[in-house]
View 1: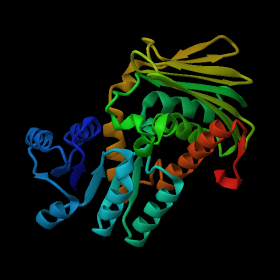
View 2: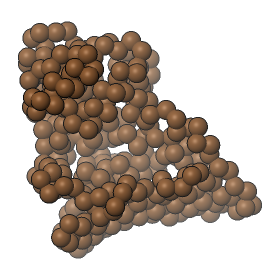
View 3: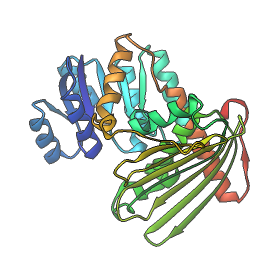
View 4: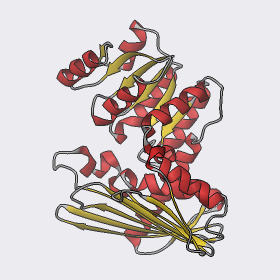
Amino acid sequence: MKIAVVGSGKLGQRHLAAWSKIEGIEIVGVIARNQERLEKVASEYGTIAFNSIDELVSNTEVDVIDICTPTHTHADLVVEAANQKKHVICEKPLALTSEEAEGIIQVCAENNVQLFVAQTLRFFPEYVNAREQVKNGAIGNPGVMRLSRGVPYPAKDSWYTDESKSGGLFMDLGVHDLDWVLWTFSDVERVMAKHVKRSGLEYGFINLRMTDGTIAHVELSWAETKFKASFELTGDKGMITYNHDDSNPLVVQFRSDENVQIPRSIMEKDPYQRQLEHFVKCISGETQPIVTAEDALKVIKVVEAAVKSAKEGQPVTLGKGGN
């Protein structure tokens, strides 16, 4: 399968590194605007540098275009790739708004191309295993879920701090845990959120009531000195905890006080590689997608509800299916 990557930044390079390890993949091109970095990255992966999707498809055969660029560029790039009849992989979030996302999904359907969104948390073993434990009844009936994610505040000249480009804290960072909650439990019925901004610091608090009665608290931060992530999943029979900083980060505790620690070996395979291998199998017709573009749309709608709630100081009720 012939792959081209759009974007030569950190995520683009991470995807290229993962693609280079997957059997049967040929990286046929890299597209980016930063010419110096583009040439360097293309050389590193033994592929060709291009300046646009049009230039790429005019000069080489390609099956899949993998978009790893800032969020505000996703809509135009996905539509361009789809109109060239190429399957598309797009980094999260799919778009800045649900309206944009719906348009993207429609264009891909009209062109009969597959669209995959890199909601990578669905491929992190800690989160996959925790979901399996919940689904298998390890904690009994789910009660209150607490998830947190924090990173350092983005650099001043970074596009992340421009909400018109990144969607801000809730959209850029929040989609990870919000997507996992939707995947693991059910649709969201009600959202209540708070967003606190200070000079060089941002905090977000999102409270979700799910349609199955589960309550989820998601805490977000652009205020840490290093990456942090954790969760505490409680039910009437036990609790599952995870902390990224711990040596044995995922622990299942039952009411019998029996502890089951998940070995670190489950984390040896890079989640980005696992994700891209899965997308390849989907495109080849070998399996059904773990995450769909409709899933990506649904989480954007939850983010929009959280942003609205934070601005208005009132809960926002979502309709059937999280709409």
